[in-house]
Length: 555
Ligand code: NA7
Image 1 (cartoon, rainbow, N blue to C red):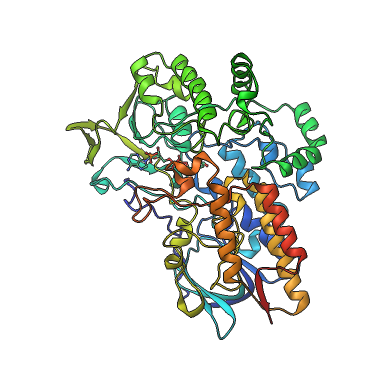
Image 2: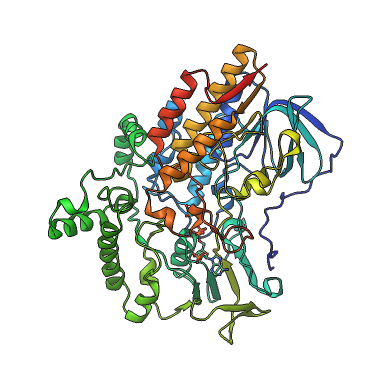
């Protein structure tokens, strides 16, 4: 039951090959995750003939694919749901403050049912290529399973973390036991009871999965390359009266998110960490550490993610916490990151992660000390020692942000390949369009504020901007839009300038585009706009108010 070494999400059922089929639409949307679903709804409401093509067998994107044990929100559930529909807000009850994957997928399905979205979505259809046809002024999209479709506008809703990557360890194909990638988790139940399980990878997915698997596993061995700074999630149930209170405050909650850098409810403290005494600082850290969600990361003193000395003080606090949670000091040493400060990579939120290593049936192997040599038929060879396993879990992450674009052969004006254009990092205007790729709008694309965002909040902003733009063009009889080279260059430079203030842009992670499993992804680049969602929204509003300045619009 081994999975393929190459982590591809192939279309789930290969229907009849309809290679002759040519479908014609006003707008094609690629992807039926949250952004694709909302974009479809808006386009339909505006009277556009729109079609969504989705590789998976259902809606939900991230929540459709990432079914691994322990997968759940790190955002408060009630800040994550869509805000655009008062009816949805009235009808949907969140059951936990940080809701789990099964419920999150149900939410996506509820949205699809509520707005009858599925009738405009073609499932099990992975887009292989999208080519701009200059003469026809439209896009032609071809599918892996055959068939093609054309539309004047192309909207990519392909997600920032949707291209899973496997390690480049030799022998992956040889393993005879069960093996799964967290981002390609099967739809049937997977039991760990009595089994010897290996997990490779300790990012946010690995941390959630390891904690859950440890509850029932026979023996668990974690292969860790880089430890991460985890802090407690502190999830809890939402009782009906609490849900009623949340519902009454939705306007206020979403308004608060709108004003926040990453659209969370945790706002950075306006003080510098040196404005208070060491005792006050410690007490503040303690309070935040005990607050659910990203409070400790996002609601801390304003300088801790920008100033090295401030970050060092915070890091020392987390080190103490890890040491207090892990009984064996030698294991604690291995679990404490040494190559980056707290909060400079995506912080996994944990629900008992460090305590897992106090269990007698859980082992931690530091593969920087003893690298994995190969995968064998029965397990892993590490430092000359063969470890036997029933199951190997790859929690090895994604080719982030631009990876999903690289998997589709996008070609713009004159046949230019997007992959080539972005070879040294993304170049975009607002993270929503690329010069040379007319009429292509990239929701949650690189250099968009959405990458650092409580995603649905920024998805709503992105989708509404794109919808207004398409409505404006239709009203004015315009059929073509493309960012000017100047606007693209200015925005790209602005993204770099803004990012350089953050410590996280000086550290290797998916946020800086580094993935050691992917050729050409070893050099850091800037994947996201770090100026924050409020500034981004303001910029978009100004641009729209000025007749979409920075874009060439023509009929
Ligand atoms: P991440 O955060 O990219 O984590 C991937 C993990 O896998 C990380 O610990 C990697 O170590 C490890 N990894 C990757 N390749 C290897 C190899 N070849 N050998 C050993 N270990 C490896 O992905 P996640 O899925 O956890 O999270 C992605 C985001 O999804 C998350 O931040 C949330 O926003 C949702 P490394 O750090 O590269 O040394």
